[in-house]
Length: 111
Length: 114
Image (cartoon, rainbow over all chains, first blue to last red; front, side, top):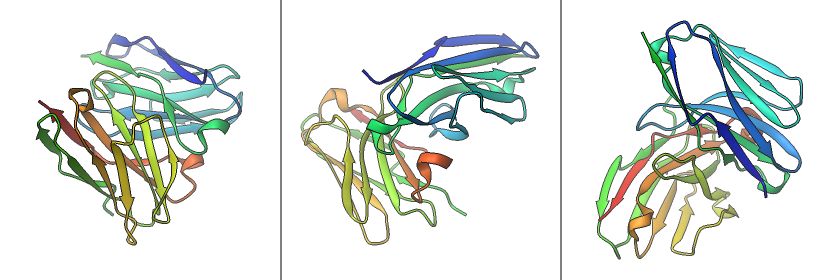
């Protein structure tokens, strides 16, 4: 079954405490692995797309990496404003351009 | 530049009623997809519209239907509402390269069925 699984479900960090979020996927013919940020009551905000194993992308304190089975979102020295739910999604051969999402990781960063 | 606009932002309906949600895509985008996001879950794909036709459909019953207009805006209709239809309904638009460069999502319509 094609699916995307994220862990942990929730993560609490102190400001400045770096960590990583995991996204594992079991899909056939991955075309793109997406990371989105979602604030409460809002729609997902696009962060990154990764296409092939070994690829890395960075944006401010966030860095996304991709292997053949999973993706990581590394957060370096997080700030309280990084608190949000981070969603991982896959576009693959069977989805025909649409996205299959994981349940998300809810990140809380305390000052 | 306005992004994806959805209306209304919140809606309360009674079981058995019908509801229509509206979406205006980002300027320059011609493809509109609808997703349902239950509380604590990731979005689930409902269907996608392109050139005024339903191009793809997820695992949702026929009670869920849609339409796309010549100006690329779209509507999502849900008939015979169930309590389980309570969710955040998200509209996402793209210009055909969304599968590579990401889809732009609206802020959603929060539907509560009582």
